[in-house]
Length: 143
Image 1: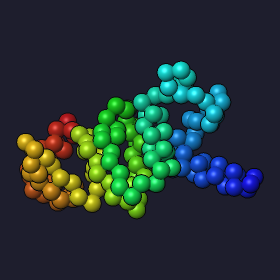
Image 2 (image 1 turned 120 degrees about the horizontal axis):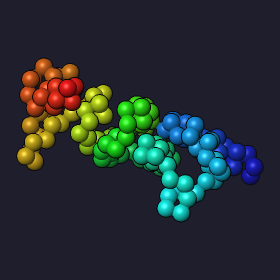
Image 3 (image 1 turned 90 degrees about the horizontal axis):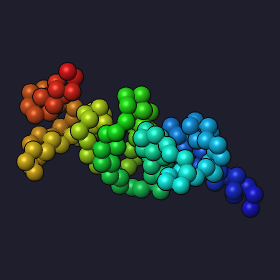
């Protein structure tokens, strides 16, 4: 029984490390036993998102929907969250809804939706060569 508990703990630690959450959790007063939320410790926006990614990794879904996963975080947190999302997306179908193009840059297929219709579709590189809506969005975000 003890080895099963140890094995589960090792798996959990692995998921939290993949989500780039392990480091800040270790700094919490009670580490993994710390209560978070309204009645407990209040993690930052980036920490909340990395905790959500860790929970998703624990659930191991075959299909995953990420809606604005990096919308409310700073650039450094976005980098850590993006790394965690890359781990999460590996080997599963993922639908990402995003306004930050850095979130979808590495996707197999990007669909640009305009007025409720798919206006453009392709990889990041393919869409940049079309000089359309996607290119305009990329240029706007680079300014």
